[in-house]
Length: 144
Ligand code: THU
Image (cartoon, rainbow, N blue to C red):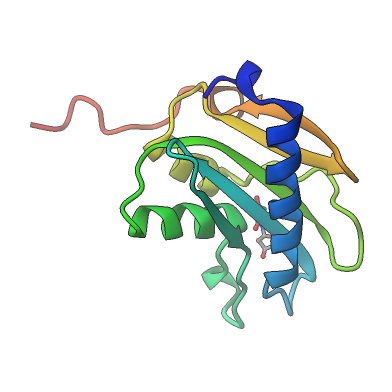
């Protein structure tokens, strides 16, 4: 799906889901709640939240939770993702995905893949994966 194809109604639906997912976040250490709504090409929406751990490095971001849930269900084709994050007890603040999540997205999605980033309240902006991760690493040329 191209950035231009995301209607306000679709963005609103995905935002509602991503914001609701923030409630599921397990964040006893950072108290920073992130929710994600990952839209597959067939219309299925996979949700994700961040899940932390007393061994801090074992934390998993909301975006990767959504991708790993989807891929583990056999999904490989994705249309868009919506991300809502912010401190516990507050409305979302701009929360672009971390570098590891950008790399994971680039495994399954091309540079046109749109990300709906909740800014505050119901405001959002749409960026593409290519804008967030130019010159992504791949193993191209080493296979076969
Ligand atoms: N986090 C996400 O879930 N997604 C992001 O894109 C950035 C950071 C989480 C990881 C950690 O649980 C908390 O936010 C603070 O870094």
